[in-house]
Amino acid sequence: MKAGLTQSDVAERLGVTQSHVSDVERGSRRLDVIELRDLARICGTSLPDVVAELESSLRKKRVPQGTKGQ
Image 1 (cartoon, helix red, strand yellow):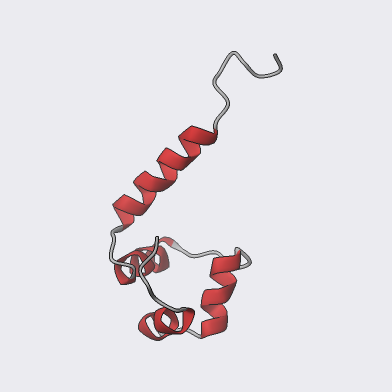
Image 2: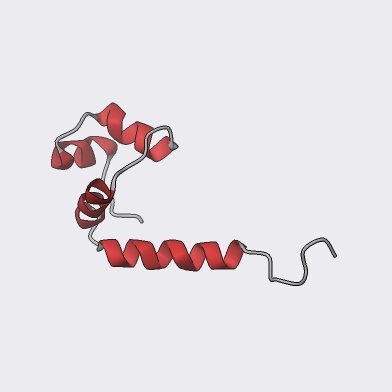
């Protein structure tokens, strides 16, 4: 998602520190579903859209069944 926001912008809107947002971005901190929903809203999208995009991305990365090990 490219919302044109800095980590500081996101942190302020979420009520957390910039380092918290940085940790999330790097993957060293995970979000719960409520935090993810709030982050999606701040970025101008919705939780269902984020999940749909994630599912689509994961489907593209999966190895088709029956081809593993061939």
